[in-house]
Image 1: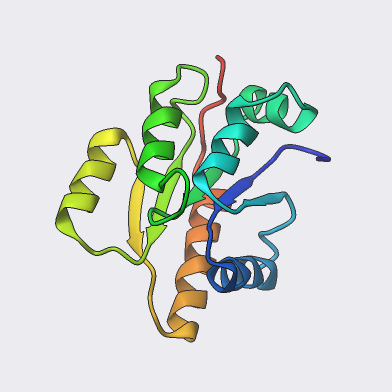
Image 2: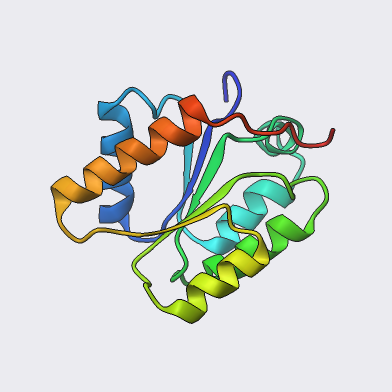
Length: 149
């Protein structure tokens, strides 16, 4: 990947992933994005083999991870727990972007270290607006820490 990775999108629903990517591209915020299709793929990407991209994740903090909760293999809650428990990735900003508005899910995510919890709007225009605002905040306004410092 050329340049620092900015967004890790972990989303198993291809329609939702396409909407997120389209909304970010529309606002010129998707240049350095990697889309991972489930929690197992996300953990392999971050902690797996020593690929150049994986080493980049550990040496240059992505500006944000957008993480769905309800996924096959390994769910988003488990990904959140593992990323926040590892000293190398603990400071990585993670925004849970999910359809679950269940209070126990929200509380558990914040307990595990989520930086934000957003329920996906069902209506396309609202979904697109939320993603654009989310991208603007995390990629332009927010100043993330560097990992491994």
